[in-house]
Each structure stands twice: as structure tokens, then as C-alpha cells.
Amino acid sequence: MSKVDIVVFGAAGMLGSDIMEELRARGISAQGFDLADGDITDAASCEALVARTQPRAVINCAAFTDVNGAESHREEALRINATGAGNIARACAAHQVRCVFVSTDYVFDGTKDSPYLESDEPNPISAYGYSKWLGERETAAAAPNHAIVRTSWLYGVRGRSFPATILAAARAGKPLRVVNDQTGAPTYTRDLARALAEVALMSGTGIFHATNGGACTWYEFACEILRRAGVTPVALEPCRTAEYPTPARRPANSRLANVRLAAAGVPPLPPWPDALDRYLAEAGQLAGRQH
Ligand SMILES: NC(=O)c1ccc[n+]([C@@H]2O[C@H](COP(=O)([O-])OP(=O)(O)OC[C@H]3O[C@@H](n4cnc5c(N)ncnc54)[C@H](OP(=O)(O)O)[C@@H]3O)[C@@H](O)[C@H]2O)c1
Image 1 (cartoon, helix red, strand yellow):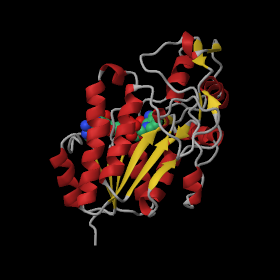
Image 2 (cartoon, protein in one colour):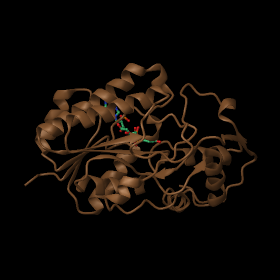
Image 3 (cartoon, protein in one colour):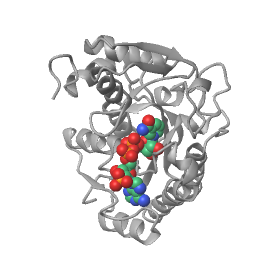
Image 4 (cartoon, protein in one colour):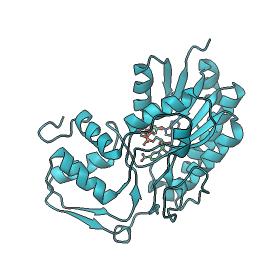
């Protein structure tokens, strides 16, 4: 019998820490690893950690996640997101362990005018998106028992996130301008952690999209964050991506249809406004109740 049911790489990160909490709440024995335990760019280290724990499944959410920074640190992003993913997948394959790789909507170029299906062809338009796409391919090529779970616009209680940034700026009295021509599904890491636990325990392989339900623009998301938190900004205006240049290009359409997740019997993630309400309460972000 395995000593550990599920190993999580990137366990100290925003998503990883919620996965650890979810697994433990379910009574699943989980072991988390982060950079301090071993660098995923070191193949021998990945092999040693998987060999030592012999889990049923690995969830890999260790990543280079600075989307703008990846443009000027392409090699590092590739080393972590592609080579690192391959190292974990090879270690999984060597020990017949299921390998779940967390990926992103940024593998797509965003030109499709409807939600992306799992079968749609990626065409990344940023260095980060390209590195994650290579990570998907490394994972699929090395580990026969794999699941690639693409998600979008993550926010969580731990780590830097869009809602916390918007709320902090509004509370500091700063006027806000937010892009209104990128559409996607903001996804709460606690809801995604639940879906990832299911995916780790099931047997289906291939690509799965997993996001909270519905879609909005970043501007619409910001409006709802402030309205639901009871914070009135001095100013909140929509703007176009072209007016807010960033080093990395982002897809205009980030919507992901969660078709294969439903077909696999995984309960759908709740609609994004419902997730936002729970986040605001759980993060202590409701007006008058900030930590
Ligand atoms: N955030 C989003 O909006 C979003 C959207 C779609 C998909 N995703 C994907 O979701 C996953 C989780 O994202 P997140 O936002 O939770 O990221 P995060 O908070 O940045 O967590 C990533 C973790 O990986 C660790 N890590 C980085 N390089 C490593 C290495 N070489 N070896 C071992 N560990 C390493 C980091 O450690 P340090 O902090 O010490 O560097 C960190 O704990 C990633 O795969 C990301 O690509 C994120």
C-alpha cells in the first residue's frame, strides 16, 4: 500500500496550498513539496521524491507564473514549466503514478469567438503560454496515465490575486482603470482544488478544462468585487487592452468549455459570482471585516 495517496508539487503556492487543504479535509493522505524540498528542474530530485513517496497520483502545480516576467526570462520559464513538467511526468511514469498537470487558458490565442474546447488547437501568444503548452506536451509524451487540467484567472486567499489588488487599491483611494476587452472565467482556487482532487482520483486521461461557471471581462469582475465587498472606489473606468500595454500579450477570449470534466462525472465548478462571494467572506474582505 502507498505511504502517501497524493503528492502535490508547488504545494506552498496559491493553488497548491488549497489543494493540500482539500485533500486533508477529505482524509486523503497528502504530501506537499515546494522549491525548498527540491527543484523540479532537477530530474534526479523529482525521481527521488516520487520514489520515496510512491503515491497513487501527483498533482503538478509548481510553475513559473509571472506572465509578464516570462517575456524577459524565457529560458527560466521554459526550464520550469516545460522541462520541470517533463521531469515530474517521467518520474511518475517510472513508478506507474498518475500525473496531473495544471495548465492555462494562455495556451490559446483568444481569437475564437466561442468557448475553447479541450480539442481546440493551442496557439500561445506569450512566452508563459508557450512554456505551459510545452509542459502539456512533455507531460502527455512521458506519462501514459496523465491528465492536463487547464484553468483560468485564478485567485485565492493566499498569494497575490486580482481581487485583493483591486480592493487594496480602491481602499487606498486610487482611481482604477481595468481592461474590458478580455473575457474569461475568474476561478477560485478552493473550487479548482476540489475538481483537481477528483481528477487525481479518477482514471480518465487527456485534457480537461476546469473553471468556475460563466464569464466576464476583467472590468466586470472588478465591478463585482467592489460591489459585493461593499467598497466604493473613487473612480472605476473600463479601458481597452491597447491602452494598458503589458510585456506579455493576453488572449481576448479566455473562455474554456468544461466539456470533458462533465463527461467524466466531476461536479461542475460553481458560477464565478458565487465563488467570489465565498472568497470575499473567507479572505475577510467584506467591508468592515478586513483582517
Ligand atoms: N494564477 C493564475 O491565474 C493561473 C491561471 C491558469 C493556470 N495557472 C497555473 O496554476 C498553477 C498554480 O498557479 P499559482 O497561481 O498557484 O502559482 P504560484 O502561487 O506561483 O505557485 C507556484 C509554486 O511553484 C513553486 N515553484 C516555482 N518554481 C519551482 C521549481 N523550480 N521547483 C519547485 N517548485 C517551484 C513556487 O515556489 P516559489 O514561490 O518559492 O517560487 C510556488 O510555490 C500553475 O501551474 C499555473 O501555471 C495559474
